[in-house]
Image (cartoon, rainbow, N blue to C red; front, side, top):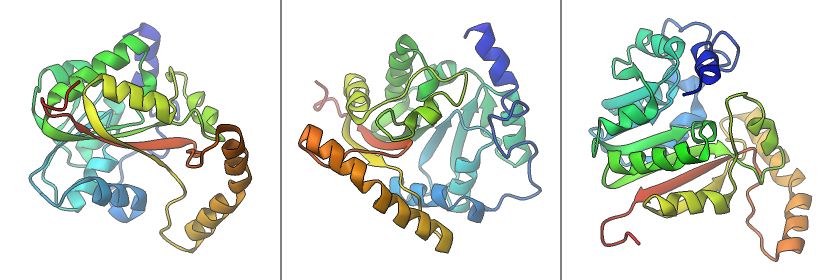
Length: 248
């Protein structure tokens, strides 16, 4: 990793990129993360013994929500020592400070589910392909992948793409399918990330999003001849590791 990136990652909390993570709370409350709890219920089968890995896990909110839902075999890796220290203070002993690719190489077939939330955009193209090959190798047969990335097709996607000096790229639904198919994944489903409804305010935000994005959807449909474009700043992607018979 380049020295300039190492410098920025080492200070990820203190420079403000890990917003709201300046100190570990006394106690983790999953109710503060309704979007993560909803995502986990959607992405994970009800098997508490699933082996779950969160890449670039930060201080571990996704893993802590998984633990609150009853999952017990949890692991995480992050290159930021500040973030890992916070995760460990919150009781996540399975979180380590290490380069993601080194960690993946050391755990072939070790996981049933891998989360890559807000991480792939930090990688240059050769690193990206290498990392996704390693993710596929770290998944058990039929293992699941959950990805969250900046959406280059989104109305404000460039706000995320250029909101962090360590970001290298953003993705469209087409380029994400290209990447995942090339690295051994199937059943690829890309989803818009509209405001999640968990109360009155979020319900109003959701309604406004659906209403105010309609003109842009119609304009894109007029140009492309199809509906269904993803317009949110970020994109959620679910996929499955291909079985040997499915590999192209």
